[in-house]
Length: 279
View 1 (cartoon, rainbow, N blue to C red):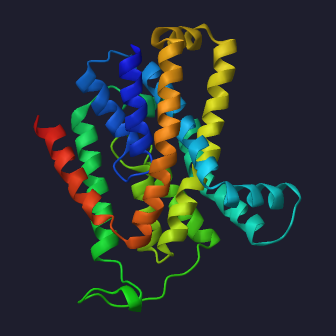
View 2: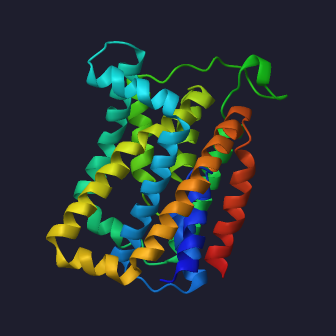
């Protein structure tokens, strides 16, 4: 992989990780358009590396919220921040089960199969549409024909349900942020709170996978060959691009969710998904 292609992939990841359009799906589409020929394992590990960059951008953007969570959890304070960390840990259970039990199965989807990506993008569009048109809205924000409701804070059961949606969204084309945010909205949670929770809940599984990749690099020759096939400079360029663009996209997405404008991304996913299937 050359440096320019890595830069493009990093920019795509930085944008698509926070926008509800599927970063993994767009990385596969982008790789197809650029003519990249990586085996599924190398493709997946490169995607993980780019996801680590956007996870770090999440920590930077949400630092004022992230730091108190760490302090409360590691000092064992029984406050709201501690409870939030517990909810995040609960949300990680489903994706941990999927990662441990079905890793080889998941790697099989990272082979630039445009039909699968197209179908998943259309499913993402449906989820975003349902969360907009069929979820009731607060009294002061209800368009004509929508029944009003009072959104609630995320509870422990909600965290597990949102975690299940995150586990399903490991498939390329199924947006992780779109799926988790739409799920939270559909079950009645506050939109802005769901968006922040969605961005925070991905930190543990992505960093966990990254640590496993680092371990494999030092213990398995295949992992070393994967890194060498991509190249260290392209990996660095892609990482930096993903991090910088991710910082801007995270702030943008929080504002979009607050205003409830996700339906436009549903239209985008529908169009791109249909093109993937047809072309």
